[in-house]
Length: 226
Image (cartoon, rainbow, N blue to C red; front, side):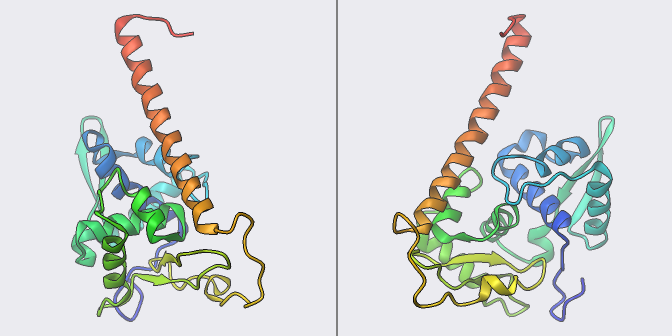
């Protein structure tokens, strides 16, 4: 922990590892805590990730060790492989809803409250956008140090995006106020386009999960799939 408020400053690989552990705890509880191989696959997913990363096993192990030293991750033996879980809620003293929102921001980059609600629905069903905004506001005004920040609204967008601060201050260009004369985004709403992207990512992930389940069932029944 290296900030004045005793907050973690995470590298991109550490943020990805922590985000995946939080996500998989909720979406695949039967496989949690995760093995190194499962964690590596989650870090390098092509869907529901921005940016897409290609981490090596050694990089994930290094990130795990760094997070373990900060008590954000613990390890346990399970079968023939070590398994890893997160302690984000305990270390940062946050409710599970806030931890889930942080995970989405770490895994997908800046998001509007509406996008966060959609992207979180497999982990927690927020009642409405106002509920999401309430948890975001709490994290932004946290006495021990802000964990998220509201970004200036993009031209043509209806909602402002939010970014996490676990990797330090956001890039200056994200905090720059857009010029008043900037042309609106084609179609009139950048937020709607981004929301559609979130939905497509979610559907692709669900299709991939269904395919994996079908392949396992066919293998168990001895059915050869073309």
